[in-house]
Length: 212
Image (cartoon, rainbow, N blue to C red):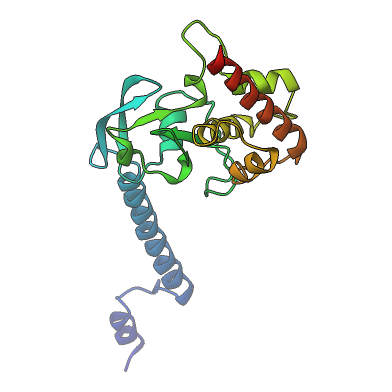
């Protein structure tokens, strides 16, 4: 076979595709497909185009609030980033630390592990909703002030909400009972003795208010 015949078989050009160029082309095509797939997934997850979101009503701190909520969105995320209630902290974001604790129908819940759409028709209370209309602090909040029961205070709103919920079931707990009742909350500073003293002071404040 002549040299010209070889050139015709290879595309009638001496610039035949080399192995390196072929591999580069395959890699480039794969990257393009992968990028397109990633963007498609991202648009689906974040609800671009509105297909993944719903406008729902929530009862938060005694007010009806409207928010665009994705089906997989957590209550903690909605409260902080849709409703601006940043007193609910995101710590571990996996139901371990309790920094995101809120009350749902008077029961403490980790809001990072509650899907927002499941609380429609229920009463949600965050740390912002504890004080009275005239700005008077809740007795448990006042107990924290009285005893200076915090260091960095990142965990404090969660501890307060857990304590308020516990005191609804046991208004006059022993120190051990209260410690057990709020043991699902963690403090990164590990100053549990001071926190527990503040929560006990809050319980005392509540009894004083209720007996006044």
